[in-house]
Image (cartoon, rainbow, N blue to C red; front, side, top):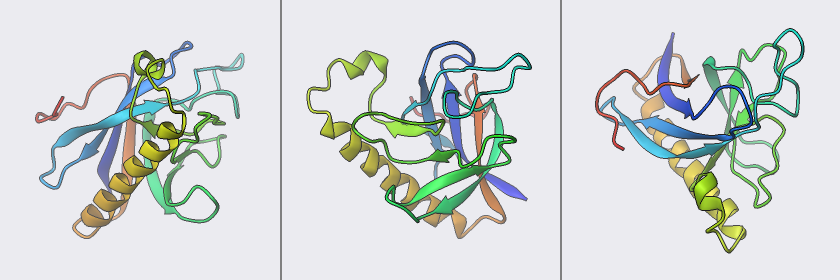
Length: 163
């Protein structure tokens, strides 16, 4: 059994677009907009499989496993990603370097040009991850099984999304 925790709505599934909107489950079971997300663009081989370290993962539903080892701090690893391994939701680095993970960020491609201090990227992403961790810890107490993320090119069907 699993419970819905995050919903990633991508602006586009295939192509070079890297941005999405990340929604988080509220304490009342509704969806609220949390932030933007940054990923690699879609790149696939001849059988339409995503390419390691240069592509985002497919749309779908994935279980989440908390991790806290390494230098990225607390983060969530997606399970059931097929041939892709160690896909995580973790804090952004000021360079926005990734190899297939999902970064919560406070801006999208239109806002990137307005960021004068690159350190803001990492600091604000760390704050977003702290909010995700806090909400996860609270909701975990009243839910059975693993948390999950749905990645789609559509908004969640449930009403109550705060824009």
